[in-house]
Image (cartoon, rainbow, N blue to C red):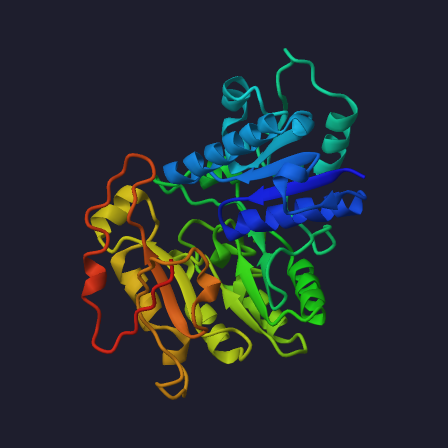
Length: 379
């Protein structure tokens, strides 16, 4: 039996890709173990969103390669690099890192098991270049029946409702890596959520590059980067939330990675009227200066961002103030917004330029919060 170890780096969306790979490995009869040094093959699911993430990914690759060299019995261990860095730099990396056996892109996560079988059955010649299997434009989107093995604690799960992004933000490389926005169907997400709840999950974290754009790519009339959530035009995030709220069981739904440009009165009303949807908003504001937002091509403005905070769902309902809390969150200590309390507006200013664009004192405005605002240190 082939043993495989997987190292997952990066965000929650990357973690779901890792879970899908593990699910396919187990379905193929392979054994997944936590110790890379004992495995026949090691997969490193990389991130390349910012410079630090690329450095972490490269360091992980070098460490695994060094360890297999130090153990003579593991010199035949196969090393596979997957994820965003492989998708973005596969051609360059195959020349720079000949010690890697294969680079696979985002669309190849479901094909990792046969790849490992081939690598183990047919060892690579000493002067043979690493195998590269990367689709130029990523189009993969998981479905409710995609094999997957959850790597989160039993009570919580990430549900990837869409993939890719249509926003042309000047500081972000995600659209070039993950492709255009493509939503799953409402039925697909609901069927996955229903199964997770049946398995005992108490918290469903909805994720994608832009969660608020869910369904808009399927509208008959094209939705632009400033389009609002509007169920009258077709399926939307509001449609999905109402369907998920109707699932029987004791659980809640947390909404992550929303974009301020798409918030609408309908979405706010939907969250307020759905008791299973956490009174919690995760909005990466990036900046509060209209000038910088224009330079970043964020398709939003200061007033929109502040309106989303001021119109938080619990402010629109008859709820005791001590039960629901709104505010700007400045993050420092953890990369997982799901660790935050259930009732808070989670909006994180960007402190690092991501493509030569240099935000000016991104944190200065966050220190001037209204009296009584509750700040949670989140990441």
